[in-house]
Amino acid sequence: MLTRSLIWQTGRDGWTAFLCDEPHPGRDDAAASDGYAVAPEGEAAEVGGGEAEVSGDGVSDVCERMVRLWHPGRVSLAEVSAWREVVTGRGVRQPFKQAFREVYLLTPAEGRTGLYSNRFAAHIVEHRRLYALLKERGWQTNWLGAFRKGFDAEATKELAEGAWRIEFRYETAVVDGYEVTLAATDQVRFDRRAGRAWRRVALAEVPPLVFSEGMRDVDLFVAITSIAADPGWSDRGEERHRDYWSDMSSAPLPPSGEVRRDALARVLPRTAIADRCTLTDRFLIVQGDLRTYKIHLGSANILMEPGDVYLCIVPSRRGDTKVFLPFEEDGRLALVLSKAFLLARDTRIKDKSILKQIHG
Image (cartoon, rainbow, N blue to C red; front, side, top):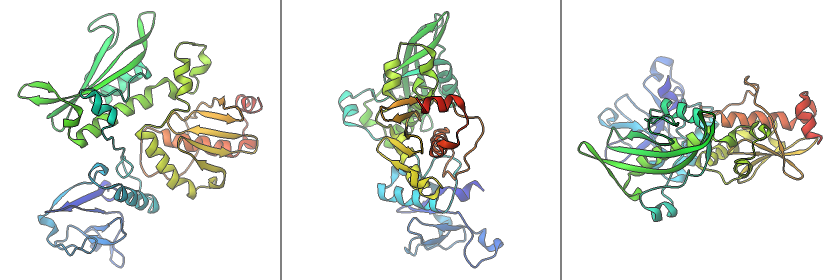
């Protein structure tokens, strides 16, 4: 059941979180279906049976309480960390990022710009993939080209049941023949519904969860469609945007990368290569027998020491690494781990193209 792998909150005056992840100890399966819950402190709570004791607060009449999905943007960092430990420690694989969900807070720079955010501006992305992902996530946008709306786009999506709207701007970067192949990202803005119209508002006026979920989508678009995520891009012989591609191999991590780092910090100690791995603020450093490797936690690109020499490894379509992951995501976490397992045992590598790069 999906409900057993998700964190919930129940409350009347305040909210208490619980996870229905396993049967109540000492009860048969039929009785356990009443809903055994585990709070982040490890204390039990029964829900759905009429009475409850959650984290020792002695609250009763759960059926009369409000129940909603837990969101990390509503709680403290300490509670987020506690729930991530519970989910990882108990091997609970969530159907979407919840305990490890990214939270995007308003930055001082966004407070100064007021009406727009440049947080995800100036990225070079693959236009066709960006368009497909926008449509998949329910955004409205236009196809870039010398027709219809031209070479600029304003992708929009309604949030909070239509009360708010986010706008993500991007424009043509490279045209190959008649097709726009690469786009450059630009500003993000928010509107509030005013009757049948929309009114542009300052970012500081946007509810925190609306702002966070909207920015999370934009981060996802950039992370997946950026040319920096293409391990073979540097071998195409294209000089334009090479500096961008190179810089992104060591750039500071966005919130999605920071969450990936936190997940790795909890998963790696449970793997067979833990003694060969070290996490820094931006990289997973893997000590092989032939060389030392730095896997960037944002782009998943690999640099070899000494000299930060780029190592191109095109990911396999097969899921070779069987490691527990606490959530399903864009595949970048699994990709980082699969590369780490490969490089930690670099003397076993058979691929001649990889070996040629390693040996210089």
